[in-house]
Length: 262
Length: 262
Image 1: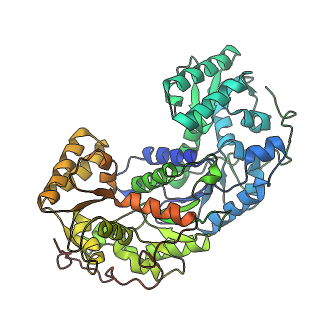
Image 2: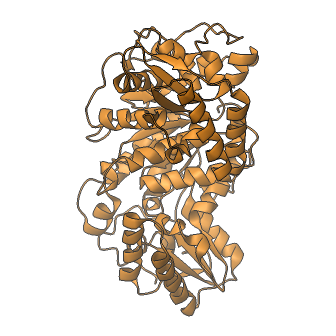
Image 3: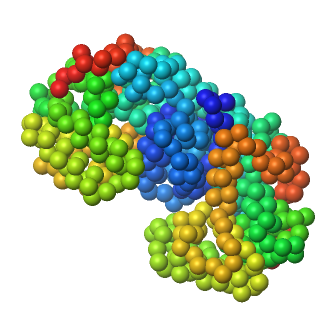
């Protein structure tokens, strides 16, 4: 541990914008009088991790798993007291990461599922505003399997992909916000009791959305967990996993269909 | 080296805002089609480095040198191919860093001095827009000692400190920009042929300044060097130093007066 605060090791660079946004949010989350009040991070801003989309959806290219395991190992060696990964889709490889280190992994998907459980009743419906790739890999659906809540997604993959592309190309815009508002309306029309923003492009405009039900961003959940951990507060065991992770699949479903619950 | 691009190890967290700005500028500097086109970084976002101001100006607190040396060592072990440090004042400890690793250190102060030399004639005057602490430690003045150019600083420490405090508290504002414009005018009135923005708070508003002479930001110089290095272009030996550094002082001048050239 560096200084008096615990250090968070960040598996980053997926994409680099999301990592920088996570760092900015972590900075903004702390009321600081001096640099030392802020959370120390070691960030492997690794832009060279093999494409998760290509491996998971197309069954092509190198397997990102070994690269993520190596990143986790070297972050631990470099002095990280816990790990975090500000990328929803990459949580498909959560168990590969936890199997390679002895420090806790602050699992953004598990932590967000817990928050959703707190915000809705047993049998509640959770609307996911994520990328089509996240949806196809079933990362959240698997995390929610034994939670008593279930995911709902609208059949608007093309629209959400269009928003992501638009933000990547032109940055946040009114057009993108309007389109994301429509996507949020669709999942509430499908009966969502709570909405999760689980795509880092959407995070850039999430605070502009107007929802009739509670809505939160997975990136904010991860920031809260990192700040708490750095302050000495350990999240519960199912959210900060060592090698006992169970609910994220380890077998790649290249078709990405069987895992879908919505 | 990770993937096909060289990885830059970043001694960061001094302050954390500057590190995030450096990362954002590095991201913006690359025309990318995919994550993999971006520069891979390993960022030790260490907010717990002992206060440089306290050690250098007041002669109090722990020596930041050993902490910086340890950060450099573990960045090298973690896979960095070169090091960068987006903090002007911390370059006082440049030799401590280069003495502890075998990979190049992309020295922001040396690189910026070289750019200033390119922009002005022999005997030229370089106006420094930095913090009073940077000025008092003479980091730039020492780097320019044998360069044929010399630094000029206005006698407006209180004004520049006021701008820094204002930006730290309220973010970039018109008031801060107007005050920094006045500071820029003062150094050009003193005969500066080129102006260097060498304070990360000022970097947030540097592009709003209107100057009659060339003006550049040290952070942008460092970004250029990191992108070039990652692409396989090595800067010249005097700017990317191994253990042969010579022009940065290693003895702490607690009064910070003797080093002043302006």
